[in-house]
Length: 75
Image (cartoon, rainbow, N blue to C red; front, side, top):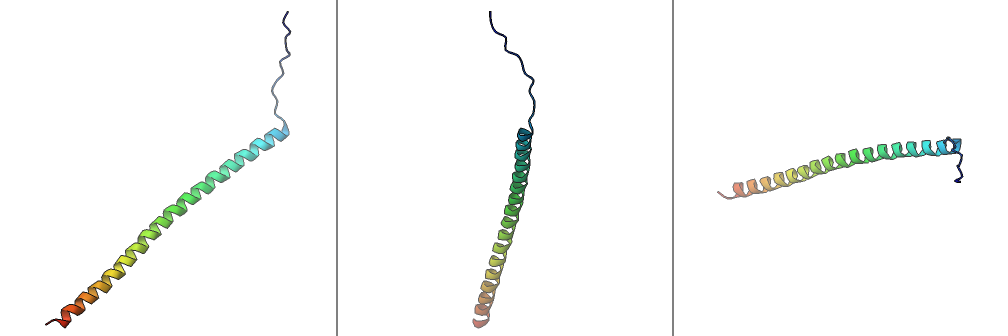
């Protein structure tokens, strides 16, 4: 004859529930942090584009003034 094991109902214990809740909160915090980093990275890329546009603009103005000076010097 085979022995029948008694079937126990699954129950949730307090330490297990605390650990599970802590893991969920940690995951939410890391997800929020990841979203903030992505937004920050996007803002930095936009700032970098603006910076390069400013650098090229200043270089263009300097070259235009130098070229204008050459045109004024030559009759």
